[in-house]
Length: 162
Image (cartoon, rainbow, N blue to C red; front, side, top):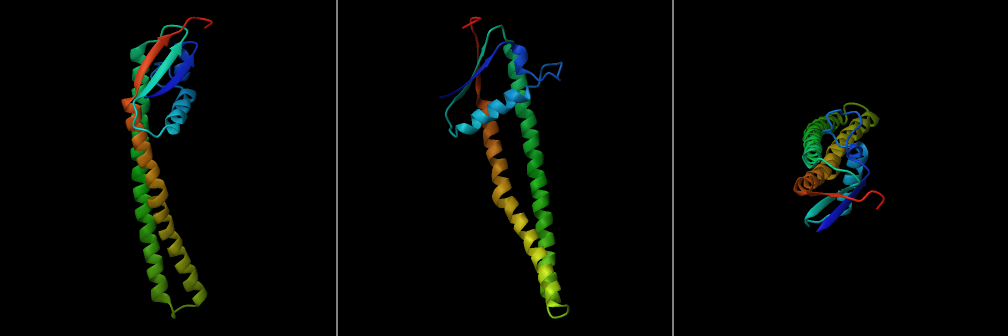
């Protein structure tokens, strides 16, 4: 079991000051949670323990937490789609430029052939970089979202001054 402790003075600290509906966690809370989830790469049960000096509406907190997960899922899906498009586009451009360099070898000057070949190689390399570096990041983010979704939220009302 991995426990994340969050100490607040009142419930308002949990929510973004710009969202009057109080359905969005504040960026400070989101960043703190992301850092805490990133520290522990485990399949252990995760408990988010919120300690507050006053009363906390559990349903509202759970709703804001689920909204954070939903937003992150949408962002992750968009990033995955963008990566796929960029990867395909760069690979196609790279293949076209490398093929052009092969076909133009001997027809135009060797400096131009090398430049075309370098541009093509660079595009293919960037496509490979997305495949090797960026796509694993989105898979890691997806695993983190599963952990977030399985997190149990416990709310404790503490004694004022404790």
